[in-house]
Length: 149
Image (cartoon, rainbow, N blue to C red):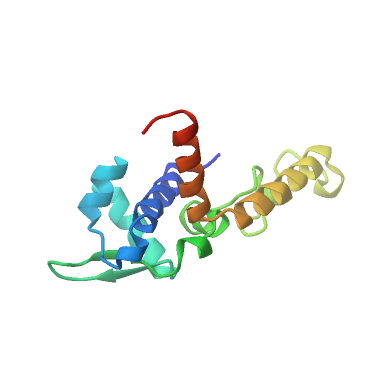
């Protein structure tokens, strides 16, 4: 399951991506209000994204956050790994957050682990090719389709 922290990280990046061409920093308060994210929680998320090279920050009255990369270069897999941890549904099949399975006698012969490895690989494939820009375009398409504008 996607963590709330990961969802908020994606939403914050989308706010920044929509203004990418403006090259103007966006204040935490603006992102917080637009995306309905608690400010303190958002501050921690943005610092983490900055520390991992996805954002720049500027201090001062005209300060705020900017994307460090084009929205087409920010993929969901990296955002989730930075903000939420594992992508795998079971810790015994996680690539970066492996933990042995307490219920399994032998992970190598466990049918559930085998299926969850396949799910992990399919999930990573989708998340690794889906950018923040793709999400914005999907939202625009869906808004037009359902006439929400």
